Length: 97
Image 1: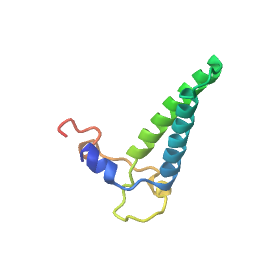
Image 2: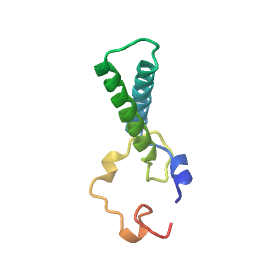
Image 3: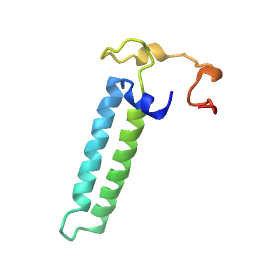
């Protein structure tokens, strides 16, 4: 599975919410940084952290996929407890991909 196939797979509900919160954090930070006013240095630094944190949260949340064959809207994290993926079938650890 390559990156684009992974991005097209459905995302669990919790991570969709986290992604949307991250996008909002990035937008708020960007709005603060681009204000045409002279702002305190502390506020500008906090806005920079909002941009970085929101971007990282959005990207990481988008990379999480449902590993079930069903394409429903249920959060299946309760089914994942104790599940181990063999090393030879894990696409993240396969150097040949």
